[in-house]
View 1 (cartoon, rainbow, N blue to C red):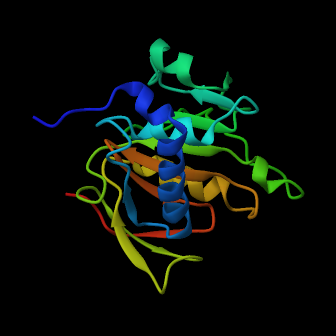
View 2 (view 1 turned 135 degrees about the vertical axis):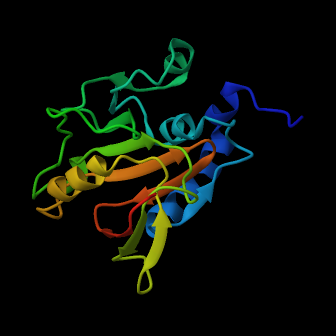
Length: 193
């Protein structure tokens, strides 16, 4: 039996620095999968991402109630709604609500666009195959996005159509993450069975 870390482990500064490095690599190389172990428990990639990126200056929307009260006590951020939060956590296996509209930033302040952290399963192993291209990708790379509902990709296209405004996405699966910055272009090449 593999020992698991207590939840506080992902809030330790040294572990947050390690997770930050992994996230930085993932954002700079879209479509590649980063493993956060041993600094994140199984099923806690989304918490490791939030513990690393969120601070008292930002708001977090937990659209699907994925964070329990014990984890909220550790997070150093304010609760908000999806329309105004800098970080939005949601279940990626179902379509976003019709009225779901995250912050997109402005032309003069595109950095105000939200980062969406979407929980999925089967990252890199199942789901439709997408071809990614853009900054950080030599030519193109192919990636399977697991159980990510296709509606998230469709809405991402609409949200990012007025670049540099838009949203960045981080897909989280157990202790794995895959980043889809707004600069990455995605084309579905093979539909999941």
